[in-house]
Length: 135
Image (cartoon, rainbow, N blue to C red; front, side, top):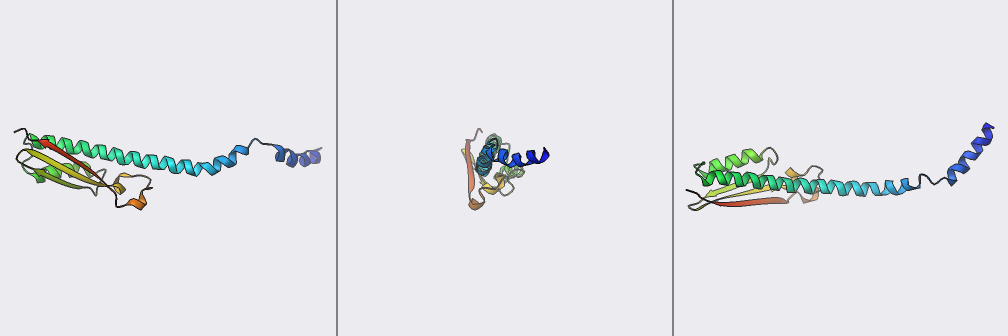
């Protein structure tokens, strides 16, 4: 009885189509994973840009009310706030007679998590804001 059952197993296995979807899933899984990783990296870059914009606007608001005496104080505050999520960012600030301007350049390599933009290491995200002085 056991031998007869063992002879039927390969025939039944050859006719069974329960696992036929597995092959297609295994072929498409890497494509979906790369697509998901790309979405994650793009989302993190855009989120970093939004955070940098918020930091620059807050710093310009402070500077427009004479909270900072010099542009160096303004740049130091922006650099300290951005340093934890973009350590290689460059900050340029100017305080004029009527306005204060801050420009932040963020390397994409600092903002991404997965690293799919590895080929584009020279890409930077630039955030620039201008506020009128209130004094």
